[in-house]
Length: 132
Image (tube, rainbow, N blue to C red; front, top):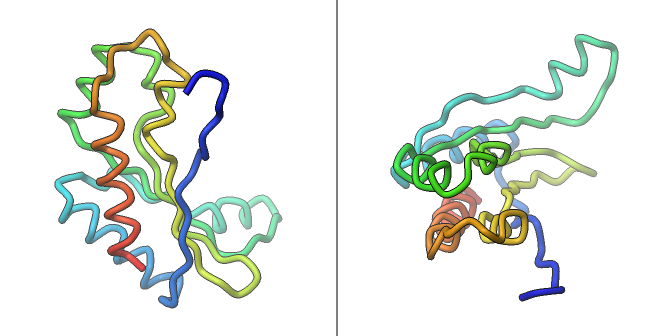
């Protein structure tokens, strides 16, 4: 893959309402064996400073074993943790989007991550797909 940049994100649209999509992502995260660490309400945070945007939440998710493994491979991967799934509205549509963990090898080429980024990528895609 040297020289080729892959897509950074996996993004889908959903017919669910914004709040419904957020709740479903949280449920599917738990069903996948991950934990929801925190949900950032970006719309509210920006509104407190006078900035208005459409509904936007960042859901931080983690699997302790996976996090431990990647941190042992390269502590700087912590800059990409925890994994995040965004739920947002744009132009009347609701989107669910996550960073693709398979790109970690592009940022950390010397870290021996094995198949883990691909495995986590499939789990995150599954969470997103089951949340639509």
